[in-house]
Amino acid sequence: MIRTRQDIRKATLSDIQAYCSEQSWPSYRASQIYGWVWQKGSTAFDDMSNLPKDVRAKLAEDWDFYAPEVDLAQKSSDGTIKYRIALHDGFKVEAVLIPVDKDNRYTVCVSSQVGCSLSCAFCATGQMKRSRNLDAAEIFDQVKLVNEDCQRIYGHPLTNIVYMGMGEPLLNYKEVLLSIDHITSPDGMGMSPRRITVSTAGIAKAIRRLADDRVRFNLALSLHAADDTKRNQIMPINNQNNLETIIDALKYFDNLCRGRISYEYIAFQGFNDQPADAQNLIKLCKHFPVGVNIIEYNPIEGLSFEKSDADTIDAFAKTLTAAGVMTTVRRSRGKDIDAACGQLANKG
Ligand code: SF4
Image: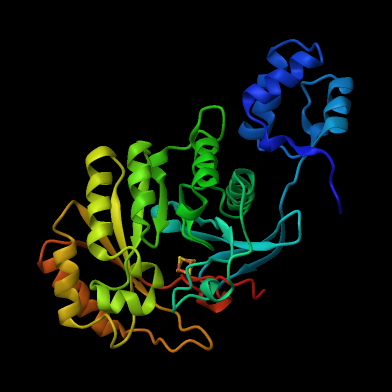
């Protein structure tokens, strides 16, 4: 379908103010419209019940909503739900709801790009190549749609948002930050930035830019190997951004921002789960306060990595803890529906 009208979610508040003044509407109309779009997450002008009918009709004549829709939801036996979300141009991305009822923790993992250009050797998304970046509204909508479902199914709103789905968020810098602005601003969803974590494969320049922008959310580095030789083998991005460069950028972030830093570390059998790997990882934890999340791997068809066994992971975690590193082991969630870390690939 060819659309000729602009998506109103691409307009800033001042664009909408200018438009309202062109229509000779009172100035408060602009904040009413903006509130419907970003506070209530409305995607239909007819829903805007405090606007006169003729105003709604004029808006619908001049603007559009390029709103994504859930076209498949799959529930895992552990309560995790994977959503396949169809974008207005036919591309699809995935978002995952991870409920931890006992802690009252409901986390959504959102995508920031269709596919990914970084080709990490262990990741299903990385095999897809990047088709395009998502815009801020398409990221915001994943949060909105999953939040609605979370309330419907679990009777609780989302408590946390992680940018760890398909794509490298820092290669879509502007739209990712704009989406966080809409999620955290009092004119938007009003969620605390402390509940948001953006994950990166390690793009030093962009990490420094986050620091210069004084962002208030948390930052996770997808580390997965604690020396350059191994990291180069599984994450090609490490060739241009080696560990020293990334650590320097993280120090800079830590100096200027209050958000927490964490390392994500998927344990691959025989590759990065040995005592020497733990010692290298401990060295990387000395530069600033950082927590380590050790993640159980989910083997992906066609890729040669195997998951570490539980005893090896526990021993690895113990070594870190004994060295004073705050360590959490994350058992895999949603693996029966291919919703676990590194498995998102629109398989349906
Ligand atoms: S792990 Fe992240 S950065 Fe690497 S290919 Fe997958 S989606 Fe991209």
